[in-house]
Length: 118
Image 1 (cartoon, rainbow, N blue to C red):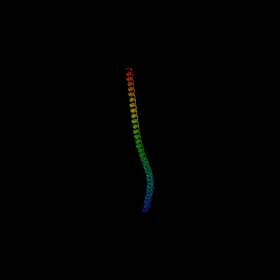
Image 2: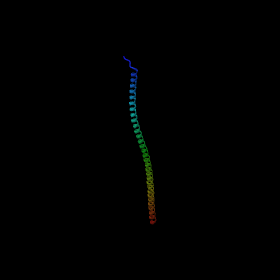
Image 3: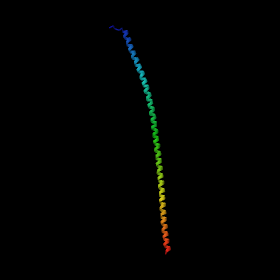
Image 4: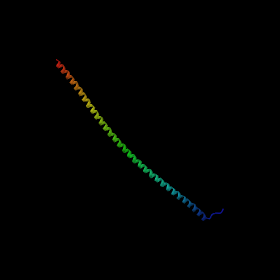
């Protein structure tokens, strides 16, 4: 086996080291590309989260508005029910007055009839 000269050893070491640096640079470029891709994905996900957050906020506002509308409808229905009850009470009172008046008229008629027959 022949021994390499010190210059050859240094040259070989430089060549190996150069190859290593070259491979390291290639890997660094790959990692930078992957990082860029991951950053794009992250940006896309953040945008999606913002959109979903806005939609959630809008949905909450819609639900609040719907609750307000339902509350107003309930109040209106209660008011309508109260009006119907008052009208029914008025009709009942009127009916009772009419019945009383009819009874009074009938009593008056019988009283007059009896007083005339005497």
